[in-house]
Length: 290
Image (cartoon, rainbow, N blue to C red):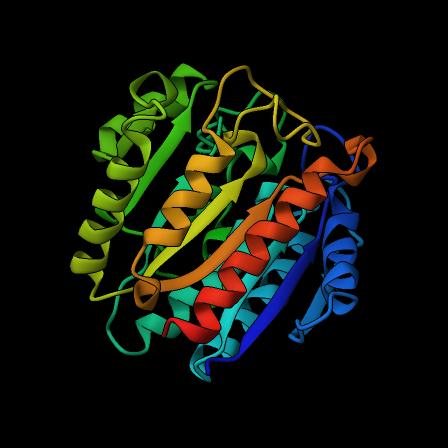
């Protein structure tokens, strides 16, 4: 039975609204008090400024080291953000461990946004809009070189789902790299699961079974997931996403991340309830389907 570790990135001030930084603590506490679930958890707290690159480098390196150690030991990492800048630390660590064995990381990015700005194209300078660019090796050198200098992702190993809010410089950047994007207008309840599984299997084949999934909750339908700072109309059905997670070949999943949950916006508790059900589904598959 495979071990699982929750790695929390308590960072929230790299996004539009503060509040995401408390998410890993809430999730960790709820899991600790859920009967039948016992997993190790480790939350790293960020205490720097929203544009403090050196503090961010130290923070993401700390998260990445935890991710690298877990994957090196065969422990499955569940990453809980934080705003979506957390992905810089999470996937840098997973990619670094794979790199030691001459293997590549693939990543499915579920989001309403592309998160592919570079410092020179971002109007706000908020890092939660830049993690993908940094993982691809473009951006602040201090953050593209977490753990090592090489890019953490190759363009051909990245696929987006749910995109519906973005700026032209981001889209142009991704197009120039040939990155595959499934805009929300291309998706429906009828085709999402099939397309998701198709891309998951293709990426698994390309990377010999090393696919990560990074879920920004605003990639899902905002009528169902309300506790996000940058909601966008429409979105992927949460039920259809769960169905996809029930059907993927779990042996090829290298890690799973949930970002941008803001507890201060979760007035009825429905978003944390969804997250807990999704995490429990994932834990059950990781422990028993391997």
